[in-house]
Image (cartoon, rainbow, N blue to C red; front, side, top):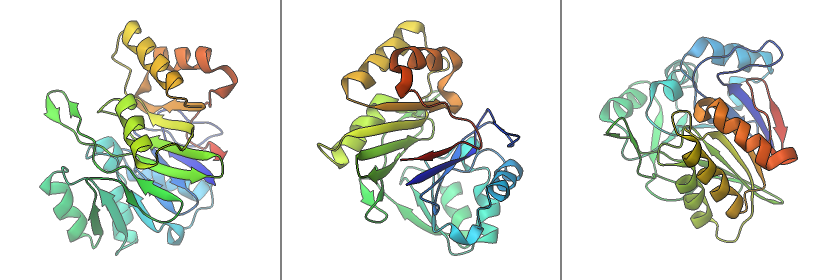
Length: 236
């Protein structure tokens, strides 16, 4: 299964960067859409991805840096399925409907197909306000990859929810925003230790994780650390 990074704060090989995150999973399921449509669609074109390939969009949480490209996508792909959380605001839901999207809300684990699922809503907060979030789960022959947008509920809670969806399945990769950029060294160390204890094999922290946390993950996971930037293509 391939994961293609379409949007991130950092870029490689001339790809466009921007605040936010997006990736294409298995050539057909889009996860998040970054903060703006222009970098997203330029990177999509650069990777020779046809919009007709995209069967559904999974939105991790209702925040501008993860929904920014969605509205232009829905204009180009009317009737697209959009997987969201019940706790997303009415503004998000009404806009999806107005643009012809098919909204699918999940408060618990839901399979998109036999290889890809969402965790459903995990309660979280941001600056004192509720910020529910979900992760995408991609199953491979060796286990599962868990892909997160920002992990406002905490990356440990996101991983725990994914494990509850598929008990006993090894976690081969945790990828995405871990939202540790404003945390102190002790908190970061505790999170890294927790992921190690949970048996997460590889990590690909990006977007809002923060450089201090990325460095600690890199030092602790060694060769099991996966560097990520816009344009990265991974085979699971």
